Image (cartoon, rainbow, N blue to C red):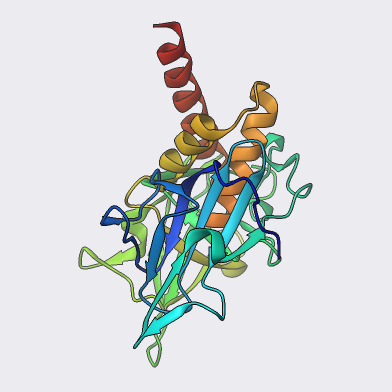
Length: 266
């Protein structure tokens, strides 16, 4: 456990798990919300938590302490009295710069986050020497609902790129149930056989949270080096949401840092 001692520190929320309200202002916390250590927080359950960034100090995960006031399931505590667990430093330091190919690009680090972020459209590079789609071979998504037989959904490609969209994770235009299981597979027409490449746990980024978190980190961080800022943003997105698609993350970072530079120049 690590507690921030500077009572003047400003906390900026990067992610909320559960329902947490700032009783001092009446605000329902969300990405980008600002907090002071004297703010009184209301957690809907004892397992709720928030992730915050404090300029010059890093990222913290905040949850109620055992001494918090309990009113049924509701837990109320002043921010400065809550648990402040500092986010780890050092790992993932270079991952935002790597070029990964399928299926490794869909692998997640269990010590960080097991989920894979699915944005509106994701592009995963693959080696044509390993997965040639010119002869009718193709990638597919195998989806299994509990107690049902697996179903197969064909996926689109463009040259050496697999296109994975949020629509691929819906049935009858409705999102699949959370307990569905997913496997990326490849059908070889030459061998007339299918193989499983990787099982993964998707999370749909319907609210564009990747861009929102990057924006918050860029505004709250004192770092000036764009390379270090990029690593900070990648790390927080990965920890808070899941592993992002490389191309989606890079585009979002470029857009947000360009927007920040425009504001500075005004």
